[in-house]
Length: 324
Image (cartoon, rainbow, N blue to C red; front, side):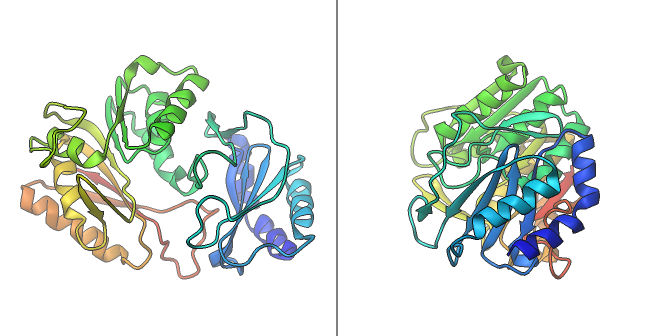
């Protein structure tokens, strides 16, 4: 494994040099599925080397060697954290004992983010493959932003950094929204421009688009309106009291109201995380939905950056920048 990591680090040298120049110390060092180690990822989050396994646990003695290779290649000592996450396990299936500081901060594009490798949830607090989207949001400089399925609000933080006047982060997890608000404060960004909507995204999206929330009365009510930038980053599948999110069988259920609350001349940024859905199918779904709404769109495909290689040139994560 340490040889695979050394090779991956050498392959990333131009990316790592660029990252250092632009104030980024959070990136993937080994993307196992495409670099010879399925079920393994190795990431840097600031001072942390985060090793995650989903299939087989790390063999004994491997973690210190991975730590040494990464620390020497990056020129800084890293604290190694190994989280084993086998399918079906709740919480971390196996925890490598390690002393961690209460606060762990990583930088991306000059922004500070909470990067604690162990917390109440399972996933890292910042998804590194969405750096492409956050970079684009910073460059776009939208004035009003709706961030749906926002998790820890990385896109919302990027929008504030670019000077947005108003940012809505919508997520059902209050703990994730709390991290997002703390990240904004960590960067001395104007938190008074942020609205944290703690609710299932489906009824909020429906109401913003001018529809009814559903059969139940939501705990948060909003009036119909549009935003300059709408970010739609749903999970592959979820089911709750407000209905189901299924981006394989019924993505238009989300796309239609998301387009409806995208201002004329605005942008809808959309993701598709299901690897089995071809890019062409994803784009065709967007085009058909827009046509039914009478909206003319121009679609630009975005791909994860070079620390997330794909073995066939077709990244599992699809992202579209839809000018509407």
